[in-house]
Amino acid sequence: MAAPTAFPDVETETDTEVREDRKYQPPYHVILLNDDDHSYQYVVVMLKELFAHPIEKGFKMAQSVDETGRAIVLTTTLEHAELKQDQIHAYGPDPTIPRCQGSMTAVLEPAE
Image (cartoon, rainbow, N blue to C red; front, side):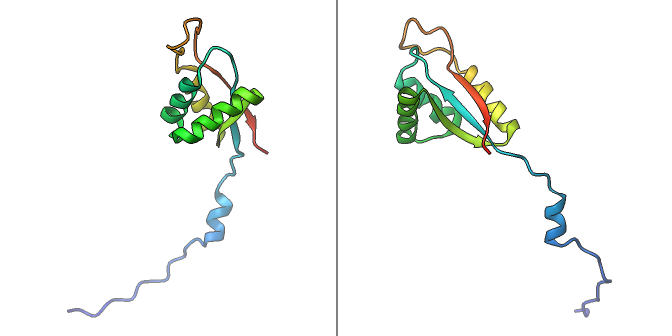
């Protein structure tokens, strides 16, 4: 077996230098707004499908929306928040409520 060869000195970036190059993305809240045209079941299922929230957490969020008019369902980067807002708006009407004409509404707000 051949003896290991020495490697020439190689300059490497330190962890600090790498962190300084990264751009900070401020967080945004995805906020679900209340309406009277969607059931708790609809909200819970939507939150499970779109956000992977467990049923218990989805139910608590549905209660919060019902009681306070809004609930933060996710805090993330602006780009991801916009995607999730679009998914909520495209989710469709609640099939259990005949008067329901469309999806729920969500807004985005800076988290800071």
